Image (tube, rainbow, N blue to C red):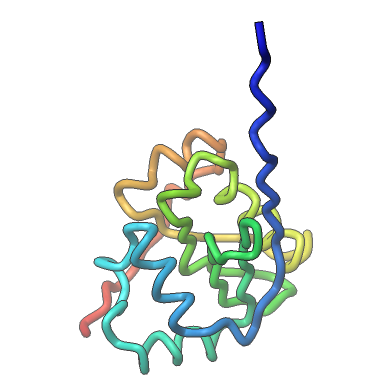
Length: 143
């Protein structure tokens, strides 16, 4: 019986990319399914979102961007992970967890990390045992 060769190992690298290209960011939002909840068709607003972020962590699979975590933080007390997006083709590979881990490492142990989950992503956060915050409040965007 002949054995088939092993699947080539996919390499995922995480990095901090403060100058992430808007088109790449948009592509990941679209391919992740997060675009309907973001201004994906407004490149000026996407550019403003990236420019104002304090931390942009990326995941690249064999060099191609497959995930982004965009965070607003003071690096000393609090951090809000505003966007966590992983291309559908790369979901299930642990990339979301890797982006969160890289974000936590970058903000340091002294800062808390908060996010609001898209309804379809709640089971992901439950599965990775991210604690829920019971007493959160918010005003929704008006535009």
